Image 1 (tube, rainbow, N blue to C red):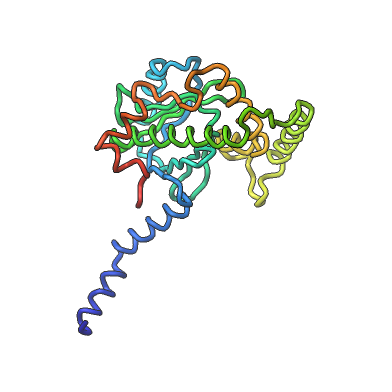
Image 2 (cartoon, rainbow, N blue to C red):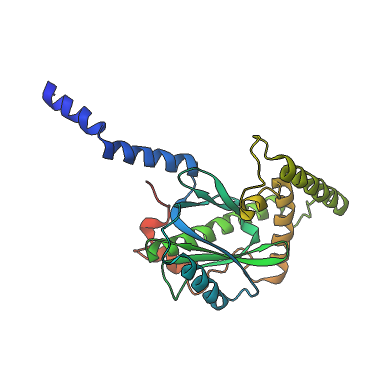
Length: 263
């Protein structure tokens, strides 16, 4: 390669556009740690009183209406982990919310507004609907399929680990664990997080993610999966509304998005 060609290649590699693209890819890798990551716009959360997807239409309409006419806020990353789903700000990497898979009752690409993805989850006995705006309908369907597959894997892992055994902490131990966690939660709210940053000014959803330890979540997962086994003919499947998992995975337009955004 001649000197001029070599100089041209180096110039291109150092160009602002290429550097921005590389920086963007590196940031996605840091946020995802190899798990599927989808770039979305998180519209927010509203309480809901039914598991029927039809009842979410009003929530979606309210959240969409609230953001109309306003400048688009920070972009978000929705990351599907083996045991939970989390939403992060892409620019800062700050976790906005974290939802354990066993707490998710259903998820779907909204049939009325195809580029909307939503899921309904349980939190302290209350149903919550979380809504995300995607840049295309195929991505909303891909997130639905990815989350449903992750749920099935989590259930399969649990079934393989426990089978018919009731390997769960005794009731007294569970109560003790929860009491300790509540005390720790109050300490966090009063003194800040482990890294010394205060949580008092964080939004309520972010604070909620600090209130549940992985140990407590493991107990709740065991109880929830046991309940599903006894009450459902297909306990390993997450309700995906009108879109079946097999149809979503077979859709040639959805397939390129199943592994998440790469950059």
